[in-house]
Length: 409
Ligand code: SF4
Image 1 (cartoon, helix red, strand yellow):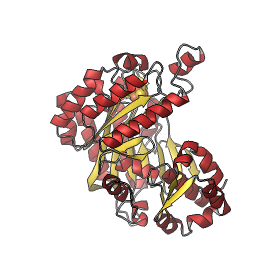
Image 2 (spheres, rainbow, N blue to C red; image 1 turned 45 degrees about the vertical axis):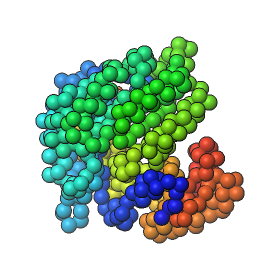
Image 3 (cartoon, protein in one colour; image 1 turned 120 degrees about the horizontal axis):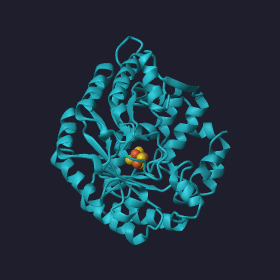
Image 4 (cartoon, rainbow, N blue to C red; image 1 turned 90 degrees about the vertical axis):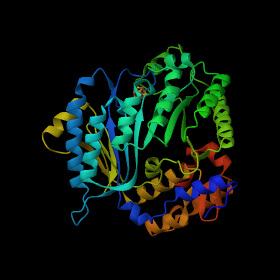
């Protein structure tokens, strides 16, 4: 097991490599439920989500209930028993726009069609502008045990510029409501590198975030995606996102203050208090199976990667015909699975656990990458610690460049 600079990191790293064998984990499937509704579209967002279709919520929930049942049958074990699942994640979109009874029905369907662990992590993403105390009490009672809120900034002007519907005060209030409702696992998302965002804004946002003692923080630098208002405005010169140097300084500053406050940076964009890393996201980083349900959701299961119809009305229509709404599918070749597993693990602070890789693919990582490993090692881009291989500080700065040099085509 990894020896690290602090006891805190040791705890998290121990947990990042789950206690179960990789073979056992490969027999499970994490569940993702996509809820594609938002009050309005934020100016930077390119997710598969829609404003102005709230009346579709109930028909959509009914379609999702059908899909959960069909997916449960599709994913059954060879002996007809339900597939085991360790996590459920309601993502979006804005899942907090569903009513408590709708969330309850969806959870019940998951429990009927899959073998959900008793201590499963069940997360719901929420917009702080949509939450009431009563709703949070209801969600907690329904079985949601982790809340992930898109806070983005504590600066009122920046929130407006992003097109967010909530105020800084509503973030604080939502966290207080959630704690009062019994949530002991709360994540807050924030963004940096925003147009007109200064280092001072960022410091204040992080200070106010830490005052709320969230259990987990996700910090993302703004990426201007094609097709969003921000893309057009940047193209017209009306907005200028933070430059690379400022973003790097903001990232480093955040890492410093969060580490001081007891959070560990266990993946590039994620920090957690001991034992509070996201088990669901770990499914993706460990390249374990997951089944995505809902409009446009992706799955990686049974040696295939597949995705659903994106448009909610079309998705509902397909489910009415009684079949799974899958529209695209590809087989994951053995070598591709090996490359992806290594690539994803090297994004995490702990890196790739070499014995687990060998156990999973019946081939040591060193054989798989061959001579390339020596070249990348000699360039000082990788480092070993016990059984783990991870990017060095220099390797982290080069990011994708390392993967391109390391992994077979
Ligand atoms: S609330 Fe989230 S999902 Fe909805 S538009 Fe804004 S960023 Fe996108």
